[in-house]
Length: 221
Image 1 (spheres, rainbow, N blue to C red):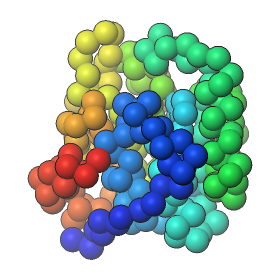
Image 2 (image 1 turned 180 degrees about the vertical axis):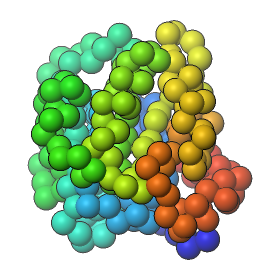
Image 3 (image 1 turned 120 degrees about the vertical axis):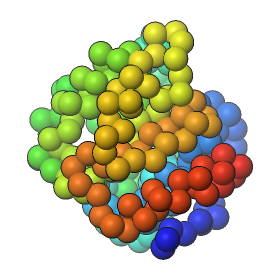
Image 4 (image 1 turned 30 degrees about the vertical axis):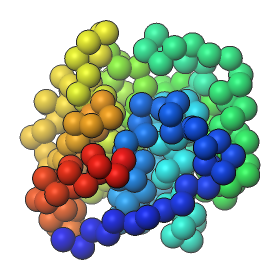
């Protein structure tokens, strides 16, 4: 396995050291960073960003790689019934971090997921992170709507695959997608990683070491 475990410095912590405590995604940021360094994507798109902990983990990897990749954050920054509704302070924090550290890589698109989808050419997104409204109907709609935008051998990340209460239904979609090459984590509410449009051998080799990766990232977060 050619995978590398990095020890990144997340620059956003110098402004907001407690940002990771505000996100249910905090346990996956090291994996997101390592995945981005491994795949060297040309583009990353995230559906549902909130304060940006997951998003800026992708951006940090792009910045450290020194590439010209772009990371797109698609969100209304208004919230929903699962994340809670919030005021403009969340978007202000996001913008401050973006402008301070990730201006070259980060592209916010303040829009609905359906509204932003036509802005992307088909097969143009290498990593697609879906973390919007978490009912089965909503997440399946997001997945099917954005699937044409995923590049061949692209990777989809789905958060909250371990959550089964409060109307969450991502786990149902995840069960449908596990026919494709995939990796899953149970910690931090669960993260599914799947290649529905082809998977390069190098990433298949990584997936074959799933137990090692699960143990490592559950520990280092």
